[in-house]
Length: 436
Image 1 (cartoon, rainbow, N blue to C red):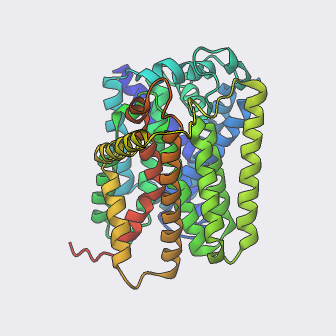
Image 2 (tube, rainbow, N blue to C red):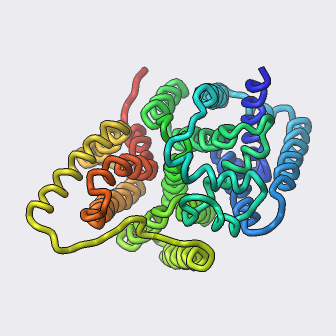
Image 3 (cartoon, rainbow, N blue to C red):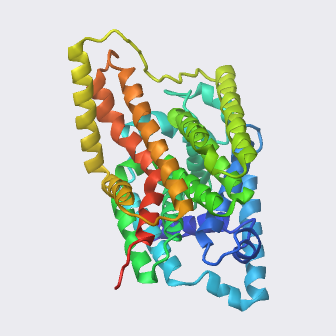
């Protein structure tokens, strides 16, 4: 019984962090200027709090104090907000939010039933989370076991919410990954212009095809997947409105990725290259160029920090050899194609993404701003394909062998990338005439 209470309290804590500093009504009227942006507000508040936690992780400040301050401020401000105008309560209580809570609790119970960690979660990421559980900071990571050169943002959240849970069970910290995952799915579905029951069907289907319990056993891929959903959504908002706010949110989400996993630095590079290829479609070119320039600066700063304080290894096993025989090349292409097909069948969201891309090519009368998004994401996908092939080409002669690398990582890389492209399914659905 006490464990059930701990799970419910964890959800309340996550919601508390999602409702401060910005209130839903304020965001609707001032920031977003639209209704039904609850999950945008959730994520914006999480992003702000995560950014502050990230900065604190480089200091000796005890992050427990931040937990108490934020939770206290969230409770007090929201009580004031609700008592001031009881009609505001309707912003929180609706069928959509009820489903959100049910999905959260269902998956929490599922994880609690089998809280075991995967190999990588146990042998690499767990020790980084434990570092923050015991109130150490970023600079102490050099002393931990195994891959101390891995980035720490995801494990900072893991350790923070593990420490500040009722029973301090390790899996309590990982529940925040589920919360972020579901916020991202519900948020992207807010773009749908369909009736409520259609939305329920679509976000339920997306959760089913995107959820993989294995990835919640200590892996970080689901965080990159979720952040890429917010990257694409806020970039789409920017295309539609040209408001700087959305470009700033997109910028922050994108530049958190190198701090989640080592290969996370590849996503800003691909995204920014795609911006350069499509810059003619954006009226405010200076903003786009500034976005690219500042992203490059942050990547350099991140690498300099790791070069100075950690045993960095950005190649992570790369061993490029350009002298390949024809047989090696055939084996490489064959292995990559088979590995990609297996990964697509494992993460079936790709069937819907590829179908959406195909159907957009077949359809006429697409809105101009949707065309910009589609072209931009198609360029991203093309560059990602080239990048993935390049990554695995570099490990052709690695001691582990190409097959080992494909079997152990290709599916997870494709899963991460799918987060950026899910918006194509949503936009395509808006063009469909659904009559039930």
